[in-house]
Length: 140
Image 1 (cartoon, helix red, strand yellow):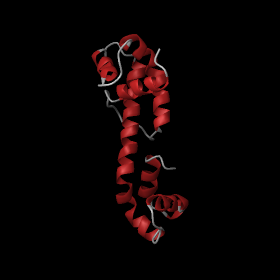
Image 2 (image 1 turned 90 degrees about the horizontal axis):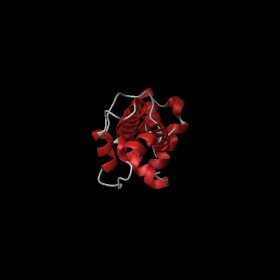
Image 3 (image 1 turned 60 degrees about the horizontal axis):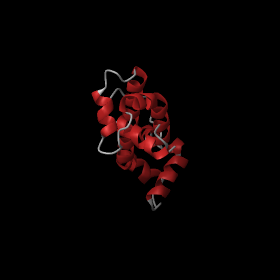
Image 4 (image 1 turned 90 degrees about the vertical axis):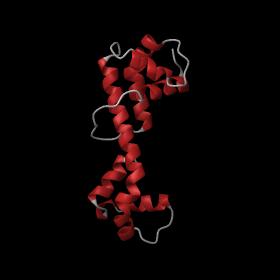
């Protein structure tokens, strides 16, 4: 059975093999790993037992055995990959989306973390798009 960090790495590698439909909210990396461990651990054990980690071997194994991967695991891989992609995208674009709100509500504040804290604190005065990107980025 895969243990601790090895199991985590295997599951994260496996998640990169599948792309799927958008989910309504992003999930944390910890929640993603927990979901994949719960929903895909048995598939990895059954289909990929004995594989060394690294080089995408687990992801390749699951992809090669896609017909045998459980529907639950396939669905979770798809949802997790989409959610994490959405979270990373929101983290990348938040300054662009929130620029007006940063100037309006948090001018004079220096440092990315302090500006972000200001935007979160002034949620009621920050625009809908900025609030959404902060939420999607996992910062609230």
